Length: 396
Image 1 (cartoon, rainbow, N blue to C red):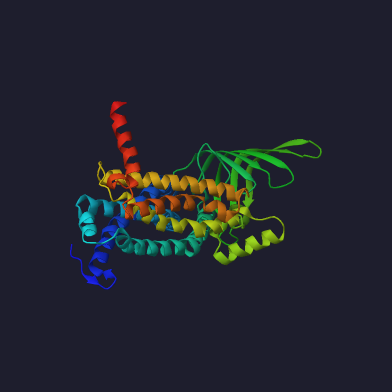
Image 2: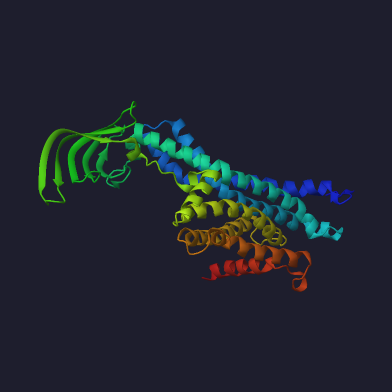
């Protein structure tokens, strides 16, 4: 590794360290995102095979889901990239050689933090622009699928609440999704509560109005008037239930589908009316707070990567997953506090960042100044716990 001094910087060193971090970062993004998407593939494959949903429509759904995953995998991948990159350099004694040449850990951290800053900006862009657009597009796509291939969203032998005011139970769905067998429906859309039983039925979309018609055959309608408590039973050979477009997909948009101006407007209206929208406030705070994890994980990864891991790179991968799990758990706790109005949204969503910022800064500064006992860095505390855990498993 050649070091060329040019004023403040070592251009070769910057490129070298950045490359060591970026390569495992890209690999981490790919693997982690694939692992998250895999959980959805089984249901999506079933939609293609059994319900006639086109492969292009499934790929569109996956594409719209991806930004939500990437917003979380970016911080985790940067931690993994720094751990693997610095771990490889520490294992080959390159970190010792660099510091012996007078290159401080502060200087080595500059290219890492620049990469982390780029990831932070990208994650912020996803949080404020890409994810709301993708969630809104996903909602529209699922609405179209529910209207044109409504059976694709139904499950056999399960009470389905896909339509507003209706609960639908189907004993069997034909493989092509065109027919329903053994249908039970609870219709609470009107003043009367009706229960409908039919031997079979079909779902037919109306392309003109966007509505959906559920045509039932050979069944009975059991109704009751809540005022008079009178009941009635009506047998039928053909019975149509019309489902309006707004009953297929309610028009109210979730906060995670709103753009930044829309969120601010909803929050302002809620506060003006005296009924704050805590969910919208939590979503706005999340947009600001989650991307910051990229910077914190990068700094934390530098300290943890200084010591060669006993279990190699697989052990570092496990540490990255464990740390992100702790961060995600704290984030969910903070989000719960924010959505329930227990704490201010920004204060609640900042809980994991405050915890990890204190840990990352403390560990980095002690590692940079060699304040650990006998040259041991604070990261050794975590690795010692891992070693003890590893030794205790065979004994158990």
